[in-house]
Figure 1 (cartoon, rainbow, N blue to C red):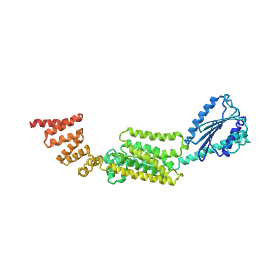
Figure 2 (figure 1 turned 45 degrees about the vertical axis):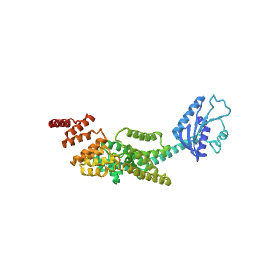
Figure 3 (figure 1 turned 90 degrees about the vertical axis):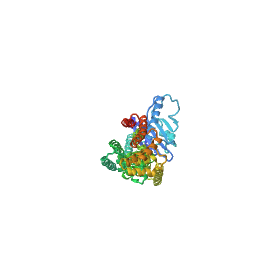
Length: 507
């Protein structure tokens, strides 16, 4: 009881802040001798710590003030410059080094206010000092100290329960279900594709992988189908694990309809980014999964106060690590990752969180998404139009199918439209013509290939083969020599030996 009597002003102030000033009691420490309050205002937030601590020396007070600064940033993380933090100490006496008249010490450091009050002062003196700064009405003395102490503990318990319920309502809006349906679909599609080898590029293209030449021909479904395709078992396992751990959280927070919207629109925007910035064949759910990361980033920003720093740092850390990983490993479609991440964040702004509707802002975000998609699509068609690399990849697709007639017609009908045809394009044209037994044209096109790339040893090798077939032994010898000079490691020895034998026989 005596210990509680020493806390008379402390308890009176705490009760007054809760009941009269409408502050929210949000945290208690050190067996309820340190209480934290919060009051949102129109222009700024106010956070107050009220504590009972006795300081023998000034240095002890200074240490606690540093601790108060640290705890304030940890608990509230409020970056508003107008926010004020008020630190009120109730102590039996002031530290020995303070030689000031009166029972109250006050000093300020920017938006941090520190007030040290002796418990011996009256309620009138306390109210007079705090009036207008923190409180708007006098602090009255409490009648039953023990009862009020228990009431404060009950108030804190209610506040904690209310925060837990609110946090649970935000974090568990919906039960995850669609995540597991998507996982089953992705794994099922993989085993269907795997029958024809999921690492075979042509097989992936046939099942709907992102392939720029066919998108250019109007196969719009390739903005969606790549989400369900994976290149090899490792790729499948990595994306499945990521979806398994991230998907349920997003679905629980946003609900089923918002989750499926974020997943697919992010995936589409990831494919669109790849269409613009990457010419190669690509597949995988990683763009959509990065969209889910974007959704969690948006959520952590909107509800930073109910999340601990560890949760937010984990989200940011996962995103940063995956982006860095994407830049360091060859073959990863980083454009799709970043496109999906940005798409997921914007999609989350468009649908927002449950019970957090802002129709004007949501409409504006949906318009922004539509404009981004339209501009991206236009840019994608522009950068892919008359592309030598796309024409090469498209013709290579037919060559691997051994449909040389389609490959030949495709190149012949488009090669004059291509800006800056490269060595690879003329090489594959020559290869197709060899398969069609059109050796004369093949010879000319292999020559054009080496003119554009003097280091193309494979083209020189084919020139040697054709020249040998046309009985131009001297030319064949020159070409195979150049091929060996460029790439001594390749085994051109057998052909060279045959050519040298023919040269000797012809003498």
